[in-house]
Image 1 (tube, rainbow, N blue to C red):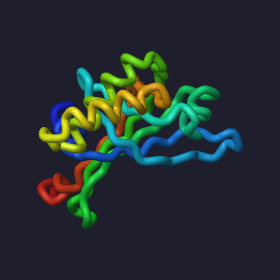
Image 2: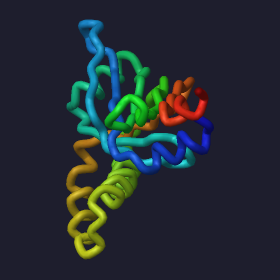
Image 3: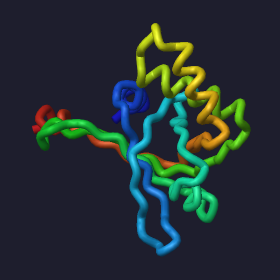
Image 4: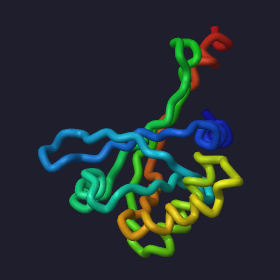
Length: 146
């Protein structure tokens, strides 16, 4: 897929699967909500999560976003990334508000959501995924190639 097609997919889809390496060497896969900031994926999670412990040991992650229910509809992107952990409460709260605004989409609850994010921010960490490489696929294009 082109850069524009990947960006469109990432803007539309809602869940990224984040793979980190556990202490035992096995991949640890977990879903995350995310936002895009200048084309980069950002997410947040609890400081005490297994993902954070894994990233503190090895700051690499593989991300996957995909869609489609049949083979000819499958499309997605896999991103190998270095992960920067941001613990500053202001940065975390700002990101949390962006994420919750994207996913909650309830303008009448904006104040309540902001208060919830402010309470959660000290317990969370922001994850910035800095892309190293990517692979993408779009099986919808296979039919036109025949």
